[in-house]
Amino acid sequence: MFLKKSVSNGRVFLSLVQGYRENGKVKHKTIEKIGYLDELEKVYDDPIAHFKSVAKERSLATLDERKLEVSLTQRLADNASSRKNLGYAIPKRIYSLLGIHTFLQKKQKHLNIEYNLNSIFSLLVYNRFLFPSSKKKSFDRRDFFFESYDFSLDDLYRSLDYFARYSESIQKHLHEKVCEIIGRDGKLGYYDVTNYYFEIPYNDEDEYDDNGVLIKKGFRKKGPSKEHRPDPIVQMGLLMDSNGIPMAFNTFSGGDSEKTSLLPIIRRVKKDYGLKRIIAVADRGLNTSDNTAFLAGTNDDDCHGHDGYVYGQSVLAADKEFKAWVINPEGYIHSKEVDKNGEEVIFTHKSRIYAKTIQLENRQGKRSLKMTIYQKQMAYYSQKYAEKQKREREIVLKKARDLIANPGKYTRATSVGAAGYINNIKFVKETGEIPDGVKLSLKLEKIAEEEKYDGYYSIVTSEKELSDQEIRDIYRGLWEIEESFKIIKSEFKARPVYLRTENHINAHFLICFVALLILRVLEYKLHKKYPVKQIRESLICYSCSYLDQNYYLFDYRDEILQSLERIFDLDLGNKIMSTAEIKKNLQYHK
Image (cartoon, rainbow, N blue to C red; front, side):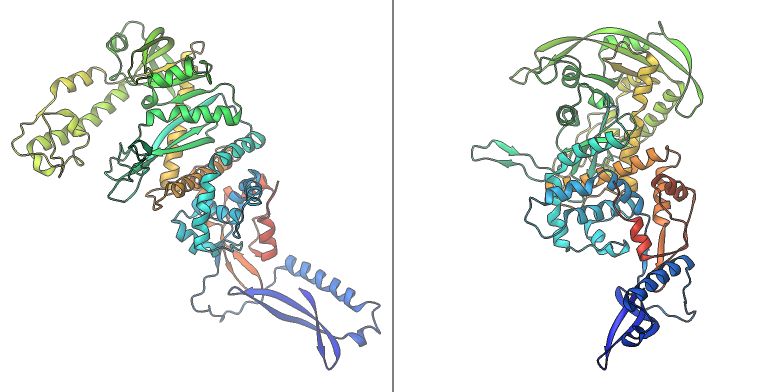
């Protein structure tokens, strides 16, 4: 409410007016006609100051009383869309705590661009967090949030190049902020790789110089898809801390081996984050001689073997000596422990310190260099795991038997998995079909060899002074990185990716990374009391509908919202809120 001065017949007339917004337009409603200024001056020393004070008091009183006159016969305007979400106030509060807006504002000072990088980035993050969709859909539904986003769709796409440019420095900035607001033990770095498909029929082409030397590898390329799809992929490596909070990520070509992606991110994080030592925790796919040598013992000037590792170890892929040790019953003990679900379980296990010889590449790329490292090796047996392996193999063998009986039904793409158990299998290069007349049979020796190791699994580590249980507890943390990939893919719908250039794709994964980081910080502040899906649903449901005169009606409240109120010192319990109150909840906080 405010004091309005209008001129009529040369005289100033005062009235109290209420401003409000309707269908996106600002309108005014006269609440009270006060009178002419010259007549009011006979009664008040300063009528304008007096009635400005009255307008302010009545505004406050109106806010307190929450009285609105709503006609039961009032109709919606054609194509009306007055519903808005306020649940994004929570991710915005963490976005603010992480200082992302200040980071981007500082970067923008050195750029000659008219659009606001923070405005675009924040919209893309909030939309990915709550309503994941394409970049265009994010732009189209920008009015579903309360803030004004003054940029074009072209501006949005242009900004992606800047986000890709700042990706590593944003990651470093976020690390520093996480250390401030939560604290971070950087000694353990959980790392894993996944990939994301593109619904295109071709690979990106490699680029060569005039001498035929490769200068840039195609980014979107067909490779070992985690989902066994034939589409080109891009791969993403994610590094997390022991709290399950993301530390850094990298992206690389779908045609590259994931095995070579660990060392670059470890080097970068140690250098940029100022970390002295990292114990890399990774699944068996990252367990290579080069990775082990770099982390546990090498002549590399940047490392000198000061880091460590905890790897899963494939028993089937190990050497003969290791396999024989694993299946030898001598040395196994049975111990009772409590698993992550609080249930008591019996572990059948043994361990040893072993001098392992690994082979490294020389400068010519040949594995002629030998190196001996001392590692702790742990072997386990689980009857449940044995039964699981048998069930999974039988599913593949059933497919293999059907393929042998009906080869015309299958191609190279559809025979994935089963082909590894079949002798003499071939495919026509052009069509991927199995040629006629090929005699196919099961690899019975391979099947029998695999069955010998059902139920056995292993962990190897450089941390020889730690107990078996401590190593198991560390290794168990990998489930959180697997869950993070699941969140990115399922909750944040990061796939398929519809962007084309490498910069735009990297910007897309930066947005997913930031959304994931915000979610993990939110989980941490909620003491991991609620599932991720439930947190997101609660914030999605916290939406409102426009009533009248700048007021909105809220119709959802749950336990999670009440907890968030206490954590972030917010008031989300009012059934009706004015635009001013809503904006107060959306202010940036330090």
